[in-house]
Length: 284
Length: 239
Image: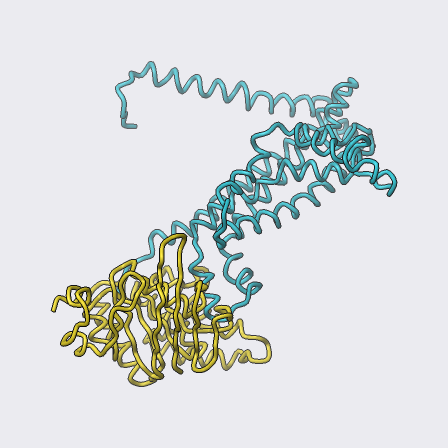
């Protein structure tokens, strides 16, 4: 490898060493600990802890939440990216920044906002009570809080992608007589489908793993409102370490799968651009 | 079909792109919009196609006022400067697009689409290229596919935005000849934007000279050269 700077081998190896030490200590080691702890009493025990009613209901709730949140945020993300790319309007830059709010503020704040709105003493609390609708400490509240936290994931990836693609192909489709529906499904969607899937994968990973916001609105009712991360904490606090670690290993598995899909998608998403950059020989 | 614009104005923010422009393109005419870049000629073309909404004025196709109609209802054949081919569709699907998106009642069946696309591929001399993707074509080939795609819907008017702008000199000359020949055969009312004087004068029946969002002069090439109406035209044409 050619050196650009004049740093000696000492600087180079110590920097590399520090980097690998940090990755090992803070990323790889904890992951290994979770796996070792989850499996140290054998597969049979591992599977039996997962079959406990607490674990099972937590897994089910987590899946149901993701099932509602991911399509919701995908739809929103596509709408937002479409508006920002194809329409001119005031406050566009502000809108793009606003979409990212959930990434900047602590998730707990997101949870608190919903508690403030829907709680018994909250703005809509009395109204909800008279109509016998429960949002806080129930499935709808968990979905709202999770949706808040995962709001930007699809939009944030799609906006730069669609902006870089411009609207020339869409305009061509319009002059050829395509209506809005045909325009989207025949022209726009094929160009952004990998980007959409990429955002959905990230959104899903975050939706399943979210703790802070959900913990405020869920109210820790075991077997009813505990998602996987909440159940892990509760198991841990109740000295149920094996259960905690086996559930944690499942979340970890999800992370690994997400990572693999992400790498594959990044390849697919970049591939067309590579073709476009080298359009072959130019001969009439 | 004739195309007319009446008192068209369009601002982008505070910048007046078009300022009270009126123009009539006669049936079967090949008309050039010539002017320096930023003079508003592309904006006028986009207003006619329905891709820009004017702040003021009307667009007429024959006698019909289409000002309020969207681009997809007007179905003007539009050829973009950078082709705007659908990157994920092959040449066949690109050309067939306008037929496939027709409402069910008017949509031709597969055999008719095949026949029409094959005919157009012959017209643009790209027989056998139907499976290629746009990325596998040269600039000149892409531009011809873009033309065929626009012609597939049998438009009543053909609008070309700097159609040869991105091509090298040799290809540009060939395509220019091809377009003139095509127009002589079909007499499809056509309007093209260019900043290249030679191109405008060689191709067009009449040339419209544009500057700062306004028409400076309209006339046949020889008329403009012999009788420039103001200083801008005189300087621009260097006569």
